[in-house]
Image 1 (tube, rainbow, N blue to C red):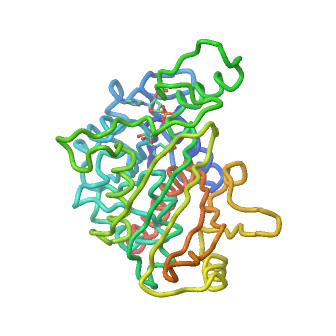
Image 2: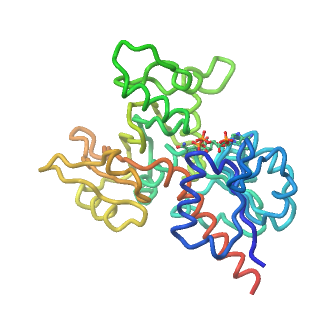
Length: 335
Ligand SMILES: NC(=O)c1ccc[n+]([C@@H]2O[C@H](COP(=O)([O-])OP(=O)(O)OC[C@H]3O[C@@H](n4cnc5c(N)ncnc54)[C@H](OP(=O)(O)O)[C@@H]3O)[C@@H](O)[C@H]2O)c1
């Protein structure tokens, strides 16, 4: 009998990408796939999480691509032998749950662990560019983001598409972003933190990136200064990074490091002004890295830009990689 794999949030952007990857990796033959969403869809054999919990209890692997609330309710039900790979922020900063980017910390995936957290998309993409430089000693970083509308789910993408098609003066829904994003650039739509919270003045997205970057990189006190911004791009987040290292490193050395690094693609052709951009990152599992340069006044400071598909390396592909490593470890443990 085949093991059952549940996808919660199967009708969402991340859920759809995960299903696509399972098909591309021929997992539909190996597993029985159950698709859950908020509202039951009987025609397509999809289940509702609230109504069909018994179905979920039969699943060995559960992939959450829905809300943090859904993740918490599933996490509370897990029994021995069930595994949850969670895309929401519910468990990311829980000290007992590993926050995994497999190229960086696959060693944290163990069969005795029930829950694995998939990082915030901006943090996952960023860490892919930081990890190969960790050997030079990372002192501090300053990041600015240019985030795509689909980072806010299917409603965000629909809202941007409607705005891009409409006339400039038209009155349109701004439910997701608060302001018109089409033809505009706006501060990230997550809530700005008040003086009752840590890092007041930063928004929740910025705070998540700071905390999660520190956890993934295992650098708990790393100084991270960040500004998160939405741009009218459908898919793939771009980030500019200013990074201070303990040691000096040449641009040639950086190019070689990124050329050889799995999960990263060097896009750095100054003569053509050809650097990472979201239209080229879209649909790719790798993170594009380029615009590599050294600050002429500070020899240990480097600058670069990255672009990564936040629905893939920032979500579904990273989760699939966790699943693959987990499968290997289960197979070794059962031998
Ligand atoms: N978008 C990204 O770039 C990105 C990146 C990293 C992580 N994430 C995280 O991944 C998750 C999914 O994001 P998304 O962008 O795919 O969102 P989305 O496009 O809005 O899709 C959300 C999905 O969750 C389902 N859902 C919502 N509440 C549910 C509930 N209580 N029980 C069961 N299903 C429920 C929806 O079902 P219906 O179709 O029935 O409404 C839909 O299938 C979120 O936690 C998000 O923070 C997103």
